[in-house]
Structure formats: structure tokens, C-alpha cells
Amino acid sequence: MSLEIHKVGGRIGAEITGVDTSKPLDADTVGRLNAALVAHKALFFREQHLDDEGQLRFAANFGALTTAHPTVPSLAGQPSVLPVDSEDGGRANRWHTDVTFVRTPPKASTLRALVVPPYGGNTLIADSQGAYRDLPDALRELADRLWAVHTNDYDYAQGKELDEADAERRRVFTAVKYRTAHPVVRVHPESGERGLFVGGFAQSVIGLPSAESHDLLRSLQAYVTRPENVVRWRWSVGDLVLFDNRSTQHYAPDDYDDLPRRLHRVTVAGDVPVGVSGEASYLIEGDEAPHYTS
Image 1: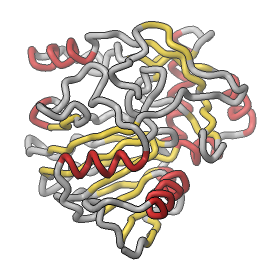
Image 2 (image 1 turned 180 degrees about the vertical axis):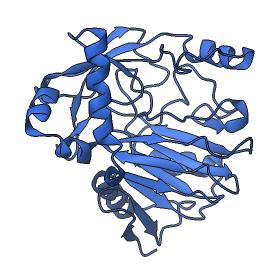
Image 3 (image 1 turned 90 degrees about the vertical axis):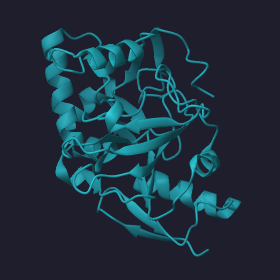
């Protein structure tokens, strides 16, 4: 194998060629891929055509695996595989970082395309470290001191009336309610670089009234999703994407009508986020998600 790294965007994203992810990878290749992950934040592999076991084996190169999700059931017979299926409510059209409502969100996520629509259905991934660098000095200094509460118990339908299927999905998603305090600015444990740690599960800023809290989170979020911080991946069946959950957010636009779209997700266990002050995240409500965190 001859690993090559081709940048997809100026700030985020690289396509990897010369690697067959269906085969065991040697330590040097894994080390280079991990370094590329930290540097480019999202890695794209075309036409890999893995099965579930192959995706699990590949993801395990980067650390211990989590189970599929703290509350949502896994794929039958595969406790670490989460099916993301448009026909079963899997339309994550909201910017987020995976599972930040627990104390130890994943280090990285892998997504593998099984069924893709003929149009739409792309995945957008945003660079939260580039967003932090874009902040004006005064706002950056403020963000360094802030903490936010992340929770899985929020109005993801944004006030819309839920049908019976959506209500059941929400009941499952919030079967255990989590509230965790994370620093708004997270220090990356490998690079030491700072990034905004907000996204869809961040619902309030500690110490601020509700209106001011929401306004500030919206302002910070706007920096994350500036076009220069976002890479868009157009899926083909067999593609594999690996992204650093410590320095990115992602979004799947619901722009493919009623067509089927199915991905499988496998996540790598992470560590407890740490802020600029050196303080670590702490749990407010819920459990330590022992079934989820390695």
C-alpha cells in the first residue's frame, strides 16, 4: 500500500488513497492515518466496500469502540453498529457533534454508505478549531471562560407536532436523560489546539439567562458553519468517512425527498473534554454511560 493524502478543502478534509481498509493495517499506517485525522479532521476513503466486521476492525485501529449509542438500539447482533436509516427517522439535519450529552463523547466516528439516493443526501462536516481562530479577540476571550450544558432532552422538532413514530423515537432517545457541563472551548488532547465545543446538544450557557444564552450559542455556532469551515462529501455506495469528533460538527441535509439513505456508524471511545483552564467536564444528570464509554 502507498498511502497518499489529498486535501479536499483548505481548512478541513482530506481524501485518502492507497489504503485498503478491508485489510489489517500496520502500526505505521495507523499512525499516519491518526496524524492525518488530527490535522485534517475528516478523512474520506472511496469505494472501500466493507461489511460490518470490516468497519468494526478499521475503527478499532484508533481505539476501543463504544456501543452503538447510549439509548438508541444497535443493529441486531452488532452492539457497536448504529444504523442511520432515513426510513427509520435517521435524518440528522441539525449541526451536532456526536453524543456530547455524555461526559466522554467519542474520539472519532466512522460512517459507511450502504444505500445512497441519486441526488442529495450528502454529509457536511465543519471545522470547530478554524471557527475558534475566526473569533474576534474579545469574543474568543469570553468563550474561553464559558461552560455549556449539553443534553439529549431538547425540542429537536423545534415546536412541530410529532407524529406517533417521531414521538416513539424521541421516547427512546431520551429513555435516560443526560445533562453534562462541557467547556465551550475544548483543548484537543493530541494537538493542544483549541476549538469551539458547541453544536445541537448544547442548550444553555451556565450562568446566563435563557435568552442571552441562546443568542450567544447561536453567535458562536455561526462561526462553526461559515462556508470556509465546511467540507461537503457526496456519498457513493462503499465510501467510508472517519472524522475527529473532538474538533468537528456534522450535518446531513434532508434534501433527497422520500428516497432511501442508509449508513452505518461505529464510534471510537474518547476521553473527558478539558477546557482552557484545565478543568474537565462533569455530569449533571444521568449516568456515566458505562455501556457506551470504554
